[in-house]
Structure formats: C-alpha cells, structure tokens
Length: 148
Image (tube, rainbow, N blue to C red; front, side):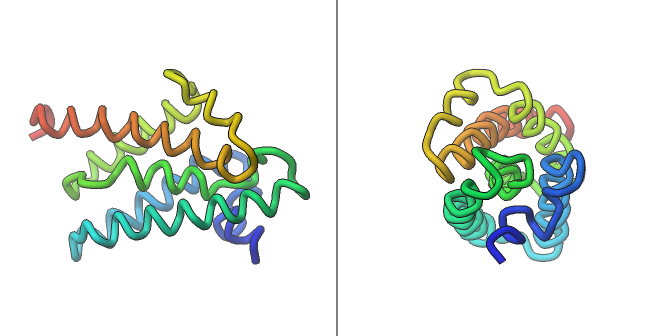
C-alpha cells in the first residue's frame, strides 16, 4: 500500500512519471475546483499529500533508494502548492504545471540543496520549494492580468 501511495497508483513506474503525476493532479484540481472552488480543499489536500509523501518517502527509501523516480507523490505536492489560490482556468493550470516542471527539473535557486534533507523530508522539500517558486511566478502572471 505504501508503494502504491508513493507512486500515485503506479504512475511512478512509468517513464516520465513525475510529469504525468503532476499533470493528473492538475487535472483533478481543475475539475474539482471548476465545479466547487474551495480554498480549504486546496490547503487540506496539500497538507495531507505532503504528510503522506514524507511518510511514504521514509518507508520506500530502503527498497527503492534515496529519492527514487518511482516516488511521484512529491510532484503532486509541488503542483498542488503551485495551484493554491489560482483562478480556475485551464490556461493558468497549464502555465502552473509548466512552471512547476521547469523549476522541478532545472532545480535553480537552492532547490537542489533541499534534496540533502534525510529520507522523506528530502524527497518532498525540493518539490515543495519548486512549487513555491512556481506559485510566486504564477501569482505574478495572474496579478498582471496578462492573460485576461
């Protein structure tokens, strides 16, 4: 069960699983928010995903190694943070996903250093920082009314 959670139902076993898992969560977020925008859902789900990610990351490290690509719950947490307080439009969700993947893959501005934390903390910390940077850039885009 722990491996199933860490890999988001097995998505982590697929090549490009991190991008796929982040895209799946972005779509889930979009459809849930489109019918019932709820900031409480966004924050509670982010907290729960983060707690589950730390917990599962601690457990699967002994079998899969440090920060295995099979663990994709961290990408879900990162994109969840990116989308908090974002207007519910497909283009903001797409831009958020692209920004998150950029920051997660390139790992600029200290993101790579977050991987040094032990076990599940390191698995989650770099993606959460990538999500935070993505959220800041996305909120600037939203505030600029560039796409409105």
